[in-house]
Length: 216
Ligand SMILES: [Zn+2]
Image 1 (cartoon, rainbow, N blue to C red):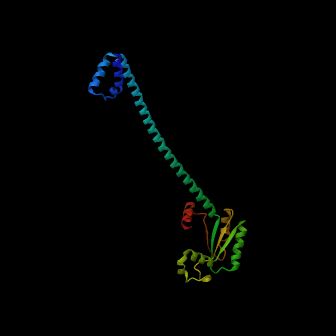
Image 2: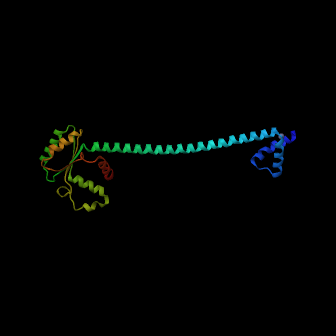
Image 3: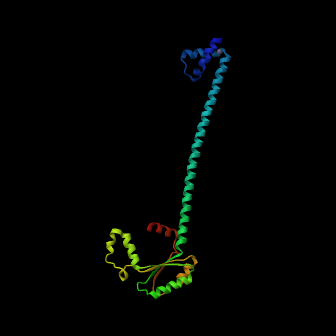
């Protein structure tokens, strides 16, 4: 039997996989009926195969878990990016708003006298410490528009400077403290020579920011 056992053991793997010819299969099965030794060998093979199958299942499960956690990571990353964009956007909006509410745009009458202009500037300085005042003439605004239009600037040919400019002179006021904005506006509101005062305090910070993005 010793010799036959060796042959059978060689065939057991193929037998277990079900790939033996009918003749060999009959031979193995006939031997297995009487040989405990070879039966044990077959059992061992089947146990080993079971372990391998189990390991394959575990690996597949791990693979799925890996895929899920990869997807979760992507979702979390996108969430963090969106959150950061929202935070940065809001910071920019409010930096811009704080910057703008300390700015007052004053449009002056075309026929404002030098005395009236000097009076206005004095009252502004009295009501806000460390204030910056920039005078922008109607000629300067006309030139800015001409520059901006570039080769189309000729459509402004009919407008000469000075009295003939389509613009009014203006003042851009920059105060340091935003509380000074209201003080300045209140003090100069009814002074002669002023056409219109614009400050941004009552306006929506988001709209201010978006319009600045659009027009600059
Ligand atoms: Zn045997």
